[in-house]
Structures are given as structure tokens and as C-alpha cells.
Length: 283
Ligand SMILES: [Zn+2]
Image (cartoon, rainbow, N blue to C red; front, side, top):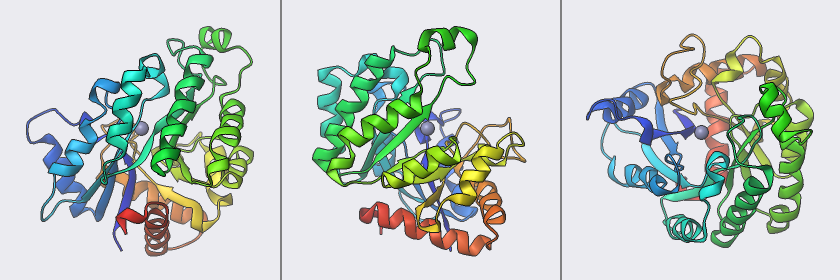
């Protein structure tokens, strides 16, 4: 069975006019036949690009493409009323299957204040509930950040804040979501699963220092796991440090299958079934 890359930034492939087309053809040839293109752009002004790519890049030898739309926490100051209106319009498109990536990021010192990030996050959960589509979560704590970032974000814990906001603003709607590039602890993973979320594993699952992520990947039930690249970032071993692309999701899938003691075929089957259950429009 083919694989699905649940999270790739296809609008970032612009090195040559043919670059994106070649990336997509290599993905299909590697057995990656479906990709969710993340529509955050470089801010709200370009969040429509993933949807445009999903609509136009179709044909034999190319993966089926779907899109999301969202304002990343780093861009939270740009979540104006106007931007949220545009987001609502794009979210209604049938090829747009999710809202995201949205959430909280207390890692980079340049990021907006927590209150600003939280307001943008809540506003987007409201839109997702209106259009009845799952949310894709980005969550990064200040735990490993620079001393400057730590002093800016203080003792605030992005995971605690995130799960509290989800409990108040998302859980009542009985809708699902994805913890994209899950990099939390086993406990944070359990609480995400309890809140109805799927855990999506990216290339950092293969990195030597990622034992915590591997522990969560073994703990998660098989009907709640997904794989992704987060391309062009976070290339898995043996391509770490290079530009990532959807074809390379096979390495993350191989690592996840080995950790769980199942065959790659079984991993392909369960992650594909999970994706179609979460996004019925893609089945
Ligand atoms: Zn991403």
C-alpha cells in the first residue's frame, strides 16, 4: 500500500521552475501517493498558495494533493479580522481539509507574546469548528530555548497552555485534530490522545537524541498514528541536514514500523486508514 505524507510545505519548493514538479514526481515514484500541503505560506498574505497547488498539480505520476489553511503562531500578530475573514473563505473550499498549522510556540525569542498567540489560536479553532474540519497543531515549548527566550516566556509551558485552550475551545465541538511533528512527552501524548487527537511523527523520530518521541511513538495506539515529513524541514536520517521532501517519509515510516515491531506494509495500511478516517473527503 502507498504511504501518505500528512504534512508538507509544498509552496516552499521554488528553486527552479520545475522544482516542485520534480519533488512531486519523486514522491509518487517512492510510493507516496497522497500529500497534505500546509497552507500557512510565509504569513496570511500567502496562505492561499497550498490550496492553489493542490488544485493545479494533478495528473498521472503525481500524488493526490489536499491543502490546509492557517496562521502559524509565529505570525500571530498578523491574525487580523481581515486575515481571519480570508482564512474562513479559503477554509470552505472542498480541497481544504484542515485548519493549520496553528497553536503555540514559546521557543523563538522573536515570537509574539503568549497572549497574542493564544488569541490567534482560539480565533482559528472557532473558524475550524464552523467549517467542521480538523485542526493541525504546532506546539513548541521554551524548555530547550535560549536563555533570552526563556526569560521572555517565563515559566509559561506551551503544552499546558495549549491543552487547556483545546479543552475549553475545541473539545466541546467533538472534532478531531493532529499533533503535527509530535515532539512532546509520553504524558503529553496521552493527554493529546484523550482529547481526540492523532499523533503525527516526523523526521526527528529518527534522530539519536529523540528517545522521548520514540517512547511516545511506541505508546500511541495504532488507530491514532500518522507520518509526515514537515518538508522542506527536518529531513530524517540518513538525509539529516539536507532539504527534506515528501519522498523521504519512507525513512520515518520505516523507523516507526521497527519501533512498533510491525512490518512496513502494516504501518502503511494503518496510517493510510487513519488519514482517511480523519479526513473523510480524501477516502
Ligand atoms: Zn509545518
